[in-house]
Image (spheres, rainbow, N blue to C red):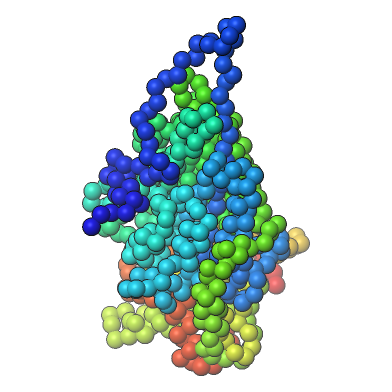
Length: 606
């Protein structure tokens, strides 16, 4: 059976010898053109120039429609942003109309198939892996829009490799990952790059290479899905291997699509020898790159210039805001010199998707899928005696976070019943993933419960000591900005110290403790007790923890190296849904407790 063009090209690229193409096949390198004067009177020919545009999105996270499935209404935030591929499509159409479609490319920097209930539904409820099953809505939309190449993000691996491969087969564009390697052969498991030819008025094609790089943290965050199957070396290391190859293949322009932020930081401590947010380092260290589309960090960076240390040339970076809120536009100008096109100028900017309507050509294709998911998330699974919200959960012990911990602790306790660790006390950690999650008084739907846990994390049980838990809590408490006793407290400035995201602040249930925010990091946990007595450093505890944290996500101390007592393949989100459904009705008064509070010199902040 003959391979289709995309499959052939990806397999060839994976073997390190092929190249995915857009347009006609790549011809051999063109002979150098004479630059001698040929016009009458000895005047030289005018210099040949060409301008083209590369558009880029990133961190779409399953957003097609401008819709929030957790609130069941159009997406909105304080900045009046809009989301979704349908909005991106309208922006893309406008750029193509202005520039000429033949003078444009469209790429993405990853995290495509996880993040909304739409993407969850087609991975888990009606999975695309089912025989004769559906086409993933993100594939439908991106094929319609006409993406040329998409880099792999770390969240592509959340549902396992079979789901990712099924999505790959449904896409009309290559999924790129030069540093996603087969664990046995150490050869690319996906196409490392794609090569695209743009036809110029002069008849000399501009050859644009797109190198895809993903995040090494996949080895930690999705260890259960990739261990023994794939490995993920650093971005700099693999860029240094591939960029010279692309230039030798005749690439006039090299663009990197990198699922990696710019600031050189990592959230995994010393567990990996690589940098998580390495895009700026790639630009600085690897010669031969003209521009980098940045992803992963969920930041808006219209244009950021980095000087390459070896060449002294500027590399232009840009990161459009997540979920389809922005579209990056790189404008290139090239000039013909010594028989090849040379980049003379690059600029970048972002377009705001809230300035345009959704493209009906995209939404019209997925109306039925959207309605199925809306019906699914509105299924009633139980009732609550009182309303609960995460609005103040980043600085107060709120019942809604207690709910997550109660579900996790009960699940682990039941799993260990009758075993060697059944008599040990079970503690649990949880984060405030969203400050807008809520459980209403009255009917609870799937969307209400799922809103507590927007990530596909699963549950584990690890064995920790009291001393290790003290270290864990001290590390978590770095989330707060140090605030002197008596100084005014502004909750809008109190949290996220050192750019720590909300999901990297853990509250631990089963212990009681104060966090003294007047003290420096590492000295904040006071009055740490278990069952009314000071915590014994040698005491052993079962710790109910999500797989992201247990695998080293956030670089919390001790937990990644702790003994694993049990692990579950079910998402915590589904465990919460099943728990509420089994209970039928829940009352916060039955499980809520104030286990921790913020203080300054012993005085509660709130």
